[in-house]
Every structure is written in structure tokens, then in C-alpha cells.
Image 1 (cartoon, rainbow, N blue to C red):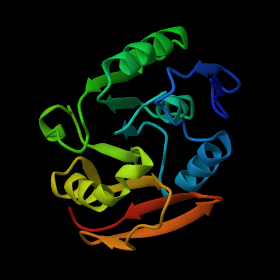
Image 2 (image 1 turned 180 degrees about the vertical axis):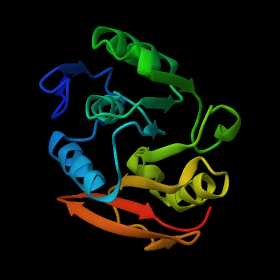
Image 3 (image 1 turned 60 degrees about the vertical axis):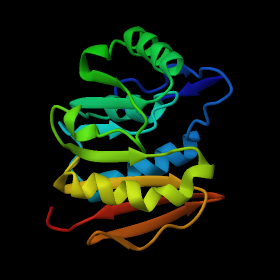
Image 4 (image 1 turned 135 degrees about the vertical axis):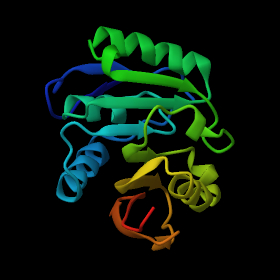
Length: 185
């Protein structure tokens, strides 16, 4: 299976998807996600953190659209190895960092060199009950900058507010994107 980058300097380039356990974010949802981000945040030069990287399509798209750095976190070493190869083929490996960790369990604060301006959270849908706690942790552990954005993809609606950050929800078929902003971190 291939995924196409929808915009930016890598527009039209393709990524291969590893194995069958990865559920990539659909192209139309990725495009809508980034359109919403552009309305909420200055994108150029930002740090992007993808907590359930999988194919890496969202993080690569972020690099294509002007992010200075993308950090890819996933717990599956084979998936990350495949992603590393894709980053090299696309000539964006220098702007990427790969971390092997379980985003729900790991203390990521000690593994990151700087807080992210944008965090994308897209775990397996059967883990949606754990999402509010993970969003809270990202805020409380200051994985995200005070003026940053936490974006969550799920198959169900999430709370409208978590740890003082307000969520704005968008729905695309059976996919929900919730963008959390605000709060004094």
C-alpha cells in the first residue's frame, strides 16, 4: 500500500505502508487536518511530535509543509525501521528523530530534546478510552509549548476541555479530529 504526500515540497511523493497492523490517516483527513492547523498556528519552523507514528505519513507531511523538525514515536521497532528507510528515501531524515516507546506508558519528557509546537495523537481506535489521560499528560509534562496544539484522531468524540485546554472538534465520516489549544502551561 502507498500513501501520497498531499502538499508542500514533497507533494506527490509516496510512502509505503509497513505490514497490516498500521492504520494510516486517510489522505482526505490528513489534508483537512493540515488545513485546520494552518488556521490555528504558524507552521513554518515548528516542531511536530507524532506519538503513534505508524507509516509516518502525518509527520512526513508536516516536514513537507514546513516544520523544522518531526519526532516520530512508535512502540514497534519494525515499523520504525521501515519509517527510517522512508525518511532517507525522501531526503528528510536529517529533520527527523525516531523514538521507540509506548506513548501511553513512557515518560517522554526525558526523551525529547524540546517541547513540540504541535502534537498529533492517533493511537489504535480501541485505545480511545486512554486518550484524555494522554492529552492531560502531554499538557502537564509540558511536552507541548504553552501556545501549542494537541491534535487527536479518534473514532469517537472526546471531551471539550482537558486540563484547561479547549478542544475544537471536526468530523470526517467516522473520523473525529479534536484540536486542543490554550491554557497556561
